[in-house]
Image 1 (tube, rainbow over the protein chains, first blue to last red):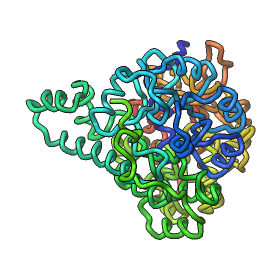
Image 2: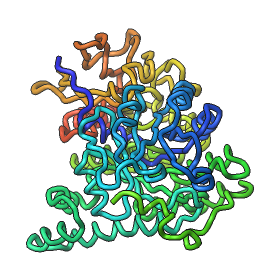
Image 3: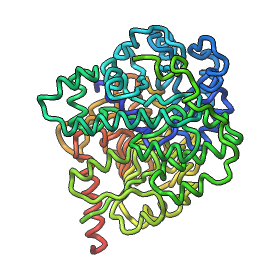
Length: 295
Length: 202
């Protein structure tokens, strides 16, 4: 019997298994356990959550493998970890450790301003951020198996997540009404690979799973992103920078499952304590916004 | 017309629904006990088993789901769904439904880089082989006397182990037919549903 590993199908397939779920940023094994016990479908192993990366400045890199290993050893759900944009050696290291998904992330300081990683070269699947459809399809062209809208990480302000999700979904709606003879010029305008654009038009959605990320802090934020068309959500600083992480994490999981049921959303939003303080995206100078990293 | 419920707490229930619609049956997403009323069959999809169990506990779904399976409504679990149906599931920190007399070990084929595809010969479906997509799949360690093994994976570094099993009206696969374009496993499940329906005089 021929056994094939690392195929596009199994890479994209794991993301399909995560749908309708919440992926949580964690920095310790204890956090990871709280996330798993709260119903997270996966965790993102980090040294610092984005809010702390933003506050401390400096160069943000792949986490210490020991931190990641401790988290992998503490939970049974999939473990993701971040590498710098273009830093394919950090990715090789994470692959060798058996990390389940790699996030080539704008939250870390880019290693290459022109080139993202050629993700086809890896057995481990990659998720990449996007602000619009063109960026999403460029990442797919490089071999990403999952997409997330970038939002603005570490802010607790959902406005950019909404902007990016509306942009992707709006462009897909526009594509669906577009005649064949306009498609090539649309590919040129978006900077998107033509074949992937055509596939997206036929499917009426991205060819891979698309999660929302960057600035979600409440159950209502998570449900908002689901109603806008996200397949699931990443919550970073929003959980472990809040007053009472466990109950908030659990509430966000329940909100994603029941995103269309306002009565349940009201119920799960009660008495969660103070959310992360946050920082309005409008107060951050453009050049300090993480979403502008990558292209 | 037949209505198939899909447990819609988390996971790839939409992929199952798309396949079921191609086979012209009604689908219903199950998030509460009320959603189980009147369904002819039930699918527990792929996803994360700890997330499923967590939400089943939270929304008081354990007993209603177990009751539906016990009442003879045909039920099929894929991957995480198989884990939830099993009698015993290794290190899972939640109870299972115990509807299927098998013992499984979670993620025992390895982490994601060991996820694999393999062609399976399935006598119940005939030729050609069915393309199995295994994603952090559970390994079936043992099956009880009343359980029929429908397919086995062999070769490579993998131990020979059952990957599709059936016990009366309860079926489980450790792989994901809903991620293929091959409708045969879903059609086979609908045959079980139709047989069960006619036997209670519907």
